Length: 80
Image 1 (cartoon, rainbow, N blue to C red):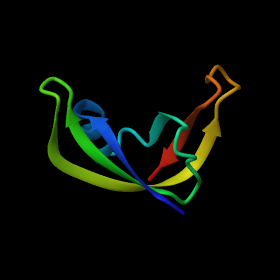
Image 2 (image 1 turned 120 degrees about the horizontal axis):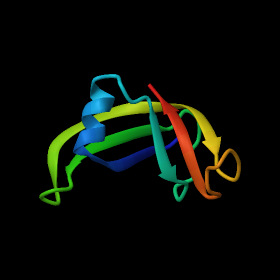
Image 3 (image 1 turned 60 degrees about the vertical axis):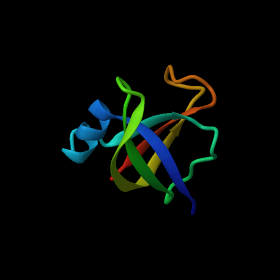
Image 4 (image 1 turned 90 degrees about the vertical axis):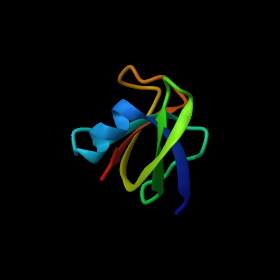
């Protein structure tokens, strides 16, 4: 199992913290796997800077691209 640090835009970061967003859509350039830890670092894209807030979550499910309209090379990860 691996740990991945990921930039997460402020609006989506808040939704994750509030429990509204329980998935991540990403290019699969890191070979994500179930059981991996994602360290999500809040990023303010209006000022192009990290805010200093972060949270971690675990990948519980992965839907690989190439089907259901998701482009090959991308994944949707169910996170907790």
